[in-house]
Image (cartoon, rainbow, N blue to C red):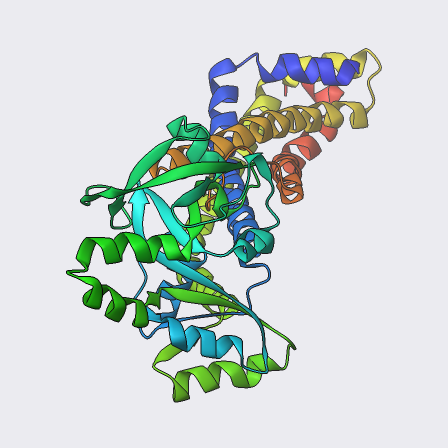
Length: 400
């Protein structure tokens, strides 16, 4: 304990140099912390929101766009598909279930999603208030939507056309809030959920010219996509090929598209890793120079410690403890800065905890940060500690 106390005092005997070393080391550690946090939250978000979905069937176009728009709800869909085609897929012998998803409107920039009760069961969400919709034009709000908009049961509102703000309002058809979901951390927290018939009714009432026109539109109803779950894992081999070659739709496998997305993001993370490595190398060199200079400046102090009976190992341990203090301080600051960078990115991109980057989390992988900090500091302190160990008291007393 005395060695640690001495090391702490020695460290801050040169406050400017110590602060600079801590800052350099913490910046590299903050970059690593940021990468670990983003990677953890991306993986967690994908695993959570893609669970139970084997394939997404929708309009032909970009498969990744289909996944991002229909599963994560962070993109626009490539188009719509006929309702009859989706119902035909439900009868396919390899399909256990097909959950319809209908997009097109929003309420104050929160997407209104037409679907079935199975969509809520897929994500395992529960109600905090009210009940599920029992008829068209009734909605259930996600926890984030209700909290941000201050919505309550019984409130009515009109949706706006489009998936973002600025579209014309469907004022002739008002939705009624009948339920509010409990927070689940899933994508449903930021959605307005209703029956598919509600979406059809709003758009048919808006565009139909007469009863005959309405009847024709009812026969040609569409959905945006369907979330399909297989009866057997072997279906993954043949079902997507069946959809892509025999229908006007496409089948996109979430696992495959997410892997592609992460590979696309890999270049940016590699650059950030290289930047973090350069910062750590620079910090290690700075720590080495500082401790080596400290040994030369404190030769008289070290000689006095030896004269008072301190063994060489004790003197060397003093330098190593100083490096440990540097590493621990830099690790604490680096972790806080990394958390701050992740939170700032979420704020800048206007994300919340249900999307890719959210609140402060502490995954087990962050344990590598303090270990790396102490390891770098001790590695930089080895040669100065060896120099302190080899100091000759006789030479110091003779003024050599």
